[in-house]
Image (cartoon, rainbow, N blue to C red; front, side, top):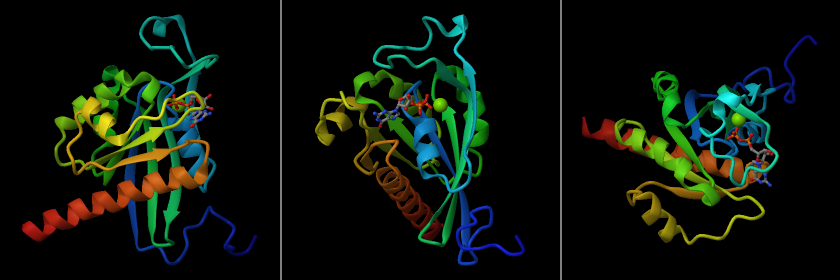
Length: 202
Ligand SMILES: Nc1nc2c(ncn2[C@@H]2O[C@H](COP(=O)(O)OP(=O)(O)O)[C@@H](O)[C@H]2O)c(=O)[nH]1
Ligand SMILES: [Mg+2]
């Protein structure tokens, strides 16, 4: 092909003014790979490895069913918002033993989308605990709904996760592009507002 067409997503649209890095963090099986795959305009990259005995008893399999792969490293995707902002999406496992990995990744990141599965809320605590120690990094919580998820009122969830009032909580269904995109848009807008406020103060 001689030139980039509007449907050739290898190339960024000329309207893009800014590119930012976004982390997608969450416990095992919460839907990180699925969410990045459903929104990415490039072929998402995913490093997965067949779950080994090493993770038996470490990764909580309750409610995950027949899942036989666990993410050991990263997902990567790209999505352009409103033709102006490019998000580079990095998915990483939230468990404590991966903190070093995503602390490095978080450098220069605009914000973090914390994916939560209400059937296994414990998975979110590790991520939220660590984010408390990274106060400069804005985040939003996206509740990924599985068919057998119970509906939780947002207020209840906020309390259970001890979330400050300014942290956005968004519902999504990771395989659904529209809701996943909405979650990322909410996070991006929130993080940019936080950034603008900070810059306005300094
Ligand atoms: N029905 C349904 N299945 C989902 C949803 N999100 C993820 N899954 C499935 O749950 C499993 C774990 O998702 P995955 O993206 O691999 O989780 P990860 O470990 O966080 O990357 C996969 O089999 C997905 O297809 C969802 O919102 N609804
Ligand atoms: Mg994964």
